[in-house]
Amino acid sequence: MGRDVGEEAHVHLIDDPAWAGATVDEVLTAVCGDDNLAVVFLADRTTMQAESRPLLAVTTLTQEESVGDEDYEQLTEFGRDFRTIPAGVHDVHANLSIGNLGFEEYAARAHDDPEGMYRSF
Image (cartoon, rainbow, N blue to C red; front, side, top):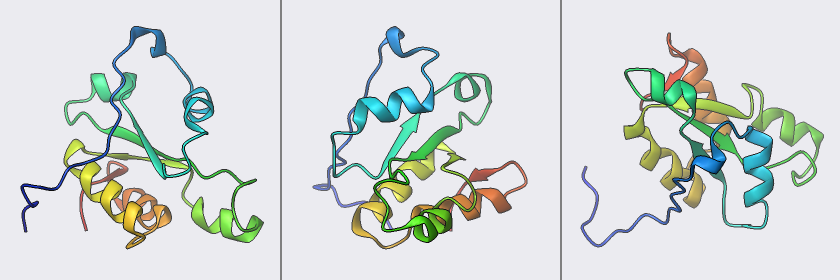
């Protein structure tokens, strides 16, 4: 099933050497004002060195913002981040945006992958 031609992804691409070596927490602090942002995809050293170019997908939800400790623990059962192949970015972003799947479902899928990456459902 292909994407509709009129469908546009809402992404903010930042290509700035000043962010080289930034930690996940530094990136999350920079985007914390965007309430509509559920996930951030980072191209880090691993992305650039691996042949499959796996991006790091990180949930923007913090323990303080979650409904409760139990909910946050469930959301982050497999960590607050996972690797995804570039082709998986749209799937993750779109399904998180509409609430079709949760971050933990993608993280679990990546956890079950032999290389620790989300590829597809």
